[in-house]
Image 1 (cartoon, rainbow, N blue to C red):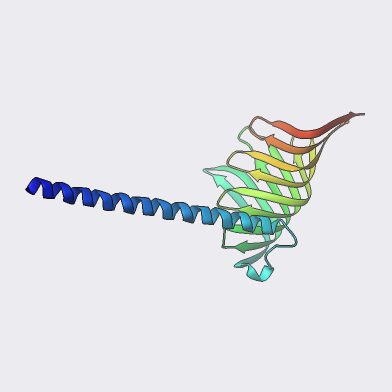
Image 2: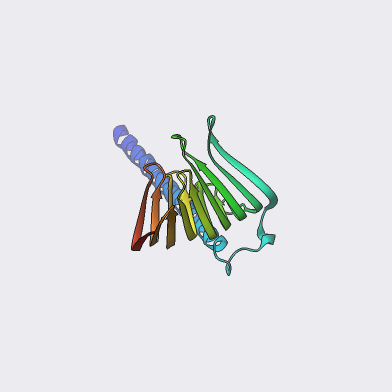
Length: 196
């Protein structure tokens, strides 16, 4: 009889632990989904003039900012902006008159400029909008209305029209994927080339 009581008690405790675990996983999943949704909403709003949050919603406002991302003693990128509005919700910064320089361990350097942008510190991503220009150390220039730099994957992408110039060549297309590690650029559609 005692063994039967102990088994019932063990099953009850096991059931409670399982239910608490399921509840905790559900809560953490909901919280993460909510954070991702809020972060995406904030980034979309920052990149859209009509729905952008007002400057008064910012938790901090800074001028003439320079942010350097370093790992050990290697500089991965440097962001400078004339004006930065930091929004605690989503850990997002709205940037104006943006200049970003990316460095690779192989010694390559990429210079990126835009009128506006947003820096997502949580995802380590920089989205840029308006008069976007990317210049490589190799001398080619990429022009687009918007670009997204995902630092963790070292990829620059856009779904917008793109113009790539180098010396006597011009390449045009819609949508671009640029892998900084392999140095491969892929234009998605409507691709045309001009050599003069």
